[in-house]
Image 1: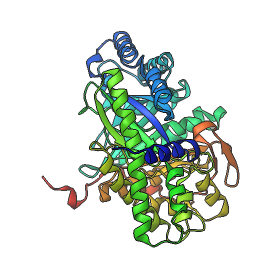
Image 2 (image 1 turned 180 degrees about the vertical axis):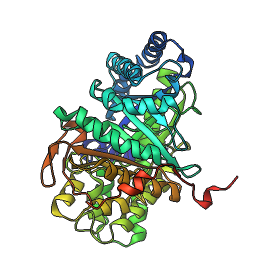
Image 3 (image 1 turned 45 degrees about the vertical axis):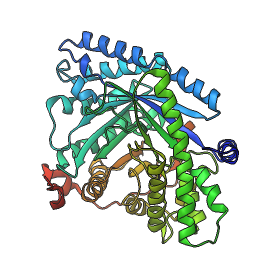
Length: 454
């Protein structure tokens, strides 16, 4: 039973500590929309999304009002469009027309973002996959709410280095195509290794082919709640620290479970998963980096950062899995730069480098996330950074990702302002030594020996 003390405690978390449900994401299968005629395909896609999601925003607002829990974003994820459009699309421009239909549907139903303009190419690319990938710069420049992701590696298949090379070029083309918005298109583009089928968070969400026709996935957040809890045990030993994080994560996840179940009931859509990720915002006090400081670091990036982050990630998961039987998505601690004021401060102070961020991704969710780099960075260098991060995911059997933003016309020492949830970011230096010969080899990096478990 929930007692009155716990009710008061949860209210305090919501009112003063930035506890929120970051997103309700409705996953929609578009497999039954597949058609060889592009016009009919686009028409089917629009009607399927509209009918499935027309009540999503209203449901999120009702739950917010009824339970007093902020539901910040309402989003949609769809089947990877490279699969859906393969029969109808004969050129990259054909795929762009699907992106525009997705954007139109997202506007009509009022969601913040729609994810799934995606391709899964960890072992090789079909003609449709390659066309979709080459269409991404144009698609993200002519749409507002469409998010794109490409899975280029997995523990089972290795890393598709042809796709890694291509994505380095596509990221720079996307930056150029959205130069009038400080290369904002790149903030809606993620490169994955081991991408999960049920991720509710953007920009990497898509509706996996193993999923039901429709499903509700919820992403919770609560860095501010965890930080406040740790302030009360300042100076205590690691056992007390771990117990505090675990108990707090349990409470946060229960809030997400409540919202997910209620949304599922109202919309008549099956509940999928709760994603436990601690997702920061630019708001003061809502920062993963500040949790690391509360654990005992001067800044994120100081010696001990990777160990502290590993501890945080593990305890969040231990608390979360006790709170919900269906935990999935990414689940852990996000460490984006632009969306986390503590991370921004650490970069500005010189405590945090790209290389340290890469090391931190070995023990947390996702990877190199929302990092602004100089606009004159070479495509091969971007591909090299992607390859490094994909290798971490492949070898460690975990999801890793890269969301780099080469800001055209800006260099180290300058700042880029994205606004809203995306925040702002200092331009970070990139290692200038060449990896051109490595990236130019082509082919595939084989899967590691421990992947052979059949």
